[in-house]
Length: 340
Ligand code: TLP
Image (cartoon, rainbow, N blue to C red; front, side, top):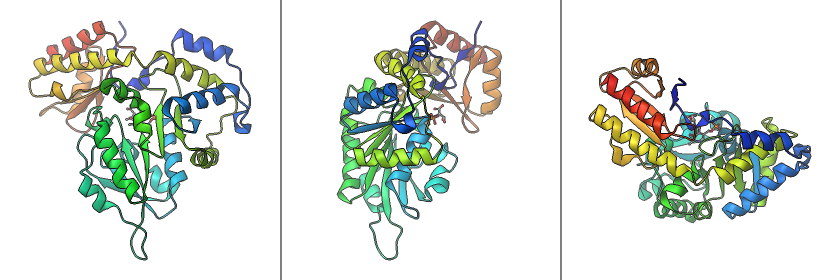
């Protein structure tokens, strides 16, 4: 039997429909702006999010890093939530690619205290490091896929905007946020200068992310993407799969959220105190291993046919997605029970 793959929603495999679309994609040279499938997808996404333009990029990391470089100058400061992906899992890219200082401001489930945010922003002066960008993340991966409520999102963006500071959203899983909260992605997009989202996570495409913004920012981003080696020529083969993901992958995210809640409840019963099921809003859960080493625990679960991601010394991450159905969730719960 195949193991239950809970390490990430990045593990989803392309569906037969995606593979067919890839094989049949009409393509051209995208560096020349002549790939019809890429152009159509970029326009479709821009319209969906209410932005002027889109840029297909190979990964969520590149989406974030292209945006940071396009919206900042070397020596400026970017405020990022302390456990954000940009800071923890992009291999120091803001420092190396954009030569910016990243200021890690602690938040709660992806939300900054507004006074702390206002205090942290430094306006241009002769002496101080100038804040030019605030990066938000929704859903917030580091706090277990928490949805940043639209009101808090608006408030944070306003604090930045009122001070002339731009805002980028790492919306790798913005559709999870939208499905869980019922808030249209356009409402989040309206608050930010740029945002990126991933086709290759819960939506299920094999590769790709989209960066969205107004024309001027996206033109700058296109040059940065080329600089980073992200000009991909006949990229329509990837965009064709991404389009299928966009059109078939959103509504069904609700199943992943239901599975995550069931999994959390089952684990809470098997390992009391290891997780608060009430905190699970979307498709990510963190499980605390108490006095057990997380790597060792992940190894024991693997023996029982369940793959989970150790994150730090005492924490496991589990992510539900399309390729894990309700029966697989029960198998995973059984494995936790067996170790409990
Ligand atoms: N996250 C990966 C790991 O790097 C942690 C995962 O398995 O969840 N923003 C957020 C919030 C993300 O969670 C990720 C990927 C990215 C950006 C980057 O996307 P990729 O992997 O396409 O560069």
